[in-house]
Image (cartoon, rainbow, N blue to C red; front, side, top):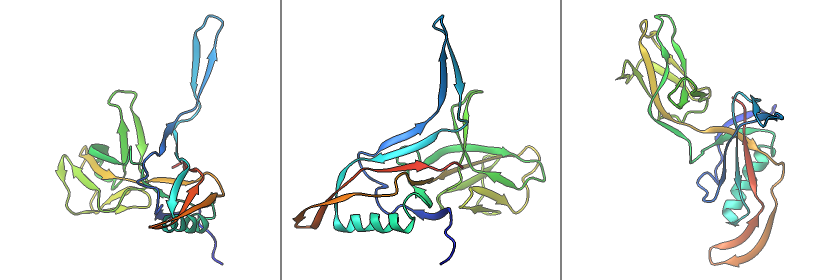
Length: 209
């Protein structure tokens, strides 16, 4: 048996478009309240940890089969995979990747949140192939660069000139894993479309990038 990888470049085949999914980013802030009522707040995580919960639901046998097959393939919580966050999966406006030096040829895809000095810059390591557009000084680059879709790194055949502004638009997945090692289900009934099951909540948690 080959060694199991920590991550596979495969998209979760079900639940990506599920209505009712609850989740999003979570920061960790340590708050100390002083006797005066003033607070001292410490940021304990440099990056948020995103989590999504697909609550208890009904599923037809074919969908449940696909979920159980995938969950078994990734050994429960052991192996990570790609997930599409419907609320935050694209950068439609051009995102600044960096500036040319005349020698630097590689640029990491990033997404900017906010426009002030306090903006948060999120590395994008799982872009969706075919959705990335690269611009140098606001001119679309139809060729002359390649994308590593497993890391989100753009590599130019010739390094952009000194002070050239490199930007990109793109769509992306989030690297996640199952939070639990088991999925529980209960056979409920036969329907005209096939067997109907109730399935316990399924939770995904983002992997650090």
